[in-house]
Amino acid sequence: MSVKKTEDAIPKYVLRSLREKQGWTQEELATKVGTTGVTVSRWESGVTSPGRYLRKRLSTVYGKSIEELNQLLDEGNEQTLSQHAEAGEERADAVVAIPASGRSEPIFLFNEPLPTANELYGRQRERDTLINRTFRKASTSIVGPRRSGKTWLVSYLLYVAAQELGSRFVVRYIDATMPSCSTVAGFVDEVLEEFGLAVSRSQRGLVALEKGLKLLKAKNKVPVLCIDEFEGFSKRQEFTLDFYRALRAMTQKFDLALVVVSRSPLSQVVGKDGETSGFFNVFETCMLEPFGVQEAREFILAKGQQANFGQLEYACMWKYSEISEQKWPPLRLQLVGKQLLAEKDQLRDVPLYWQQFERRLEDVYRGVVY
Image (cartoon, rainbow, N blue to C red; front, side):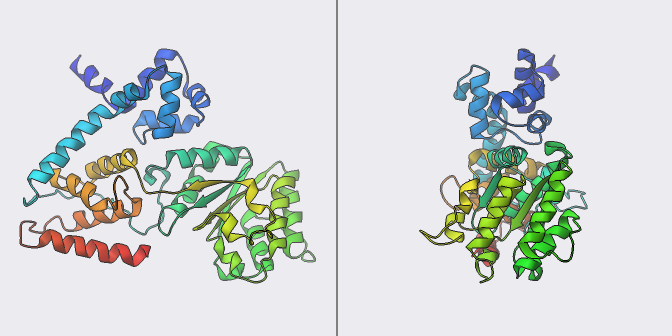
């Protein structure tokens, strides 16, 4: 009986219990709150938890206030992390021995490719927007500063595309700053190669791309083209407004779904005021901001458990990863965790240790972000 009571307090079991009491399948709940069955499954497996936007939707379908739902989902995790933080503050000068993790793979991924879909933390609303729009053959613009996780979000789509979208969708990725993409013809050749399309050599440039997309549509396939570093086109004279107009037309005629990644909104990247083709008007923008409390909590709890962190480390993750009030950049979270884990054998009660820790942290972080 005590085991059951403990399980019922865990967020993933709370979510499953609420759904089962209504007699809904995971797919039925997903439809009601505007997400996917896979996302619901991830909640109920404890891989991720719903963010603020989807919690509001869940509270509505379950007839609860957002405060009631948050209390059910956060009570256990909040208590655990509060204890870690309080104890960490009290023991700021203590020496904590952290057992080795015993893992061959790195726990914290600083400036590394996304290895699996499960390693993407947070960004639940952005994931849902990206997957749902792509499924509807609509285009999405991912915008954010350097090292904010834009490429990871695209990598996540590539990992889950087969399961989330189905076999009709063919999702491919290119980087606009590659040498092969320095001309329109080179860009088209790269795209055709990615999609495995053989077009007559008499056709070149955007005409060849049009022919290739026509072949895919005839096969009942939906092409999804992810273009990273999209500003790379705007720095080359050959990529004129005609290029963007042509891409826009192909999204309309051939069901081409574009996922473009840039630091600035497309209205600033493509053309000038009064000259724009309306290219960016077919997109919905996903702006990537630093993590809030819920997303940071999810990351710190999961990664702290993997790293066998002690109370001091949990408190330091919160403290040193926060760049301003209630803002934790995911890259900084990875870096702080990596540095804490690497220095687990250091004597942390030596004079000036934490000042030196913070200085090393800032030197590395500034080197990759600014």
